[in-house]
Image (cartoon, rainbow, N blue to C red; front, side):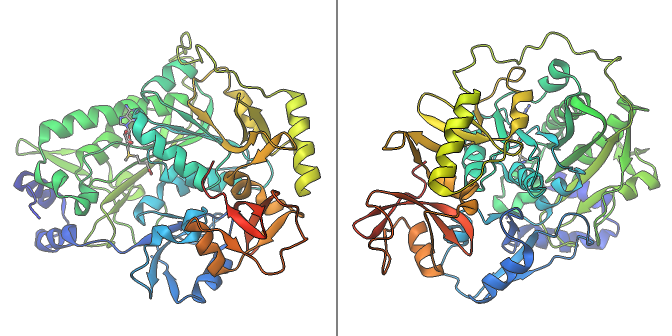
Length: 493
Ligand SMILES: C[S@@+](CC[C@H](N)C(=O)[O-])C[C@H]1O[C@@H](n2cnc3c(N)ncnc32)[C@H](O)[C@@H]1O
């Protein structure tokens, strides 16, 4: 792999010891160990560990997290079988875990998420951290809050949509906007905001040598401008008392500490830097060298609050995290103008009381689920019923959206509604009738889109009836009973 000399010169300047450079270069080219993030609202760590240990899989704690209010959920994974792709495992396909780089699993943990929070993920695609935020919100059990997953890139946003569906993150909405616009159009509406910024991507250089090969200062300056604007918008749109987390998968100081320094100056008195409490982290740098002159950008005290992940030290991808608290409102200084991002031609959706009643009755009668209005909101388009959280109503008329919640049913059939795969992965776990628990082998077949023959099924269910598929009591999907078999309905959502 080729690593550009301009880049290495920059890195050499900020390494603690100059003789680290060879080590740094070597680690930049090594593949990273596979790692996952467990979907905590579906499975806890003990249960997950027990389950996979039966199959000769092991999870290894990277040791970055002190026991806190969020259970540790990001681990390296070791498996005996190497010919079976991790992404094809039924646990992945039905949203029990997400494949995510270890350091990338850290920023969302520092958002200080509370029950019912409304959180903006300003540049979200492909959605790893949005699914994580949604998961933490759902882990509270009562009010699910909402994560607004935004990205300017429509194609990448489709992957976010797919990932939110797969992970059962129904407390979500998707917007396709330039992230710069939130602050000036909405004002202070979010409890917390994540800026997992577009960056030069050196930290993931191992994926392709492109970012390390063509590293140019002018290009970096452009990216820094975008990152700064996203931070400005994030901070303006966050409520007083809220948290803004900034992260990049890059190691040069310009996209990281220098941006932190600039934003602290720009919003002096309104934001404060907070500690990113990670064990064995590297701290931020305090000085940069410009035209042979050394410039102090942060105090020692502030640099210690930041978290840097170096490939050769933490043995992760290169990564950077800063956490800010908004201590003062900015509403008077920057009053929001006319809201230009409100829905212009809202596509027809029905969130009426009568719809809530009809869907709730169907779910209760057919599947025995008692619908809790503080957790679930249904809405209908002309073809499908979606499940989302009641917090959506606060954004419905002020934010142009692409998609809300996850599709759980379509119109049709004997009872007017036909359950879709995501019915199983969202509320399916709560069914106390019309469900079938599958064992591990059948679950894998189900994820491979095979139909499942079940012994003694005859007579238990009506032909052509839809059942929820469960594994260890967790909702995994939906199937249709036909001729004594479960006809596969996987991802036919
Ligand atoms: C590092 S990626 C985000 C990764 C994501 N948070 C995850 O965990 O899966 C940065 C994203 O920023 C998006 N982006 C770039 N410029 C943007 C802008 N002005 N507004 C919103 N999103 C932007 C890119 O399309 C890209 O998807």
